[in-house]
Length: 329
Ligand code: XMP
Image 1 (cartoon, rainbow, N blue to C red):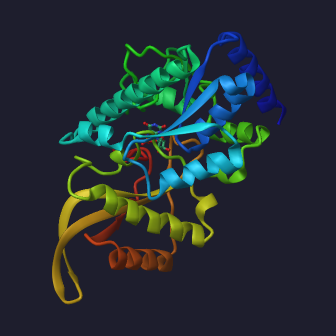
Image 2 (cartoon, rainbow, N blue to C red; image 1 turned 45 degrees about the vertical axis):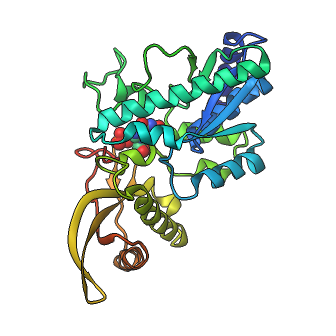
């Protein structure tokens, strides 16, 4: 793809001229397509002066940390430090119910962790890293703060995507955002030129604030996160087993802080409801819900209710974007 090859050459040139020969750069890897492609690109431009960090914020999916870290090592050969900051994030989120508030807190904590990481590197290298790489895409930019002249009419923020509007103004690190003008399909093309494995490029998008935007309300309440992880894993695995993963833009479960009455094994239950959401989309800006076959849903719901304690009702979200957004918060 000549166009993406041009974009790549241009970006590498820009990064080399921006980052001085003895300057260092930090990159936060999430395990998703965007940050992985951004890191690989910057690694191509400046080599070992790139230092990647993977933050476990306590809001990751089932076994995400193990899965992602082993792939970075075996398939991508990117040097990555893993930082477990789950306590730090979850304690700050305790009692917080407002979606924007949650996003802002998470953005702030990420920066605090990056600052700590920069400090650690400074001790090791004798020089403080000056830059932070972010895998921000064009749709993230326009939905968080539409640039003037972009043709977008809404002047308000729909959501503070944590890697754009959610960043604190006093952050010391300067941003490198090599994907800022690209859409997801272009990032996938770029990744394939950079030899990022197909399995990575085909991963469904996952939001920076993680499961915090999929547990409605206070994420620390009860064992909501654990229940959500189990439900999500069953749903996504069923999609993979049915050969549907690549046909769907994104599929996930949402935890509702709502208790409903059920009957399981002749016993009355009063437990949680969850929602399944699967969508098709071109770029995440608009989306349609995915129409599963009846038997697929029957099997998934049965598996969830039989295996996940604390869930007695499963709903499906059949709202397109607009009027809904993809994530529930
Ligand atoms: P929404 O919910 O805004 O989602 O319709 C559109 C796409 O963006 C993802 N998303 C995020 N990605 N940081 C990200 O990197 C975020 O804060 C964020 N919030 C939403 C969402 O998963 C969907 O693919």
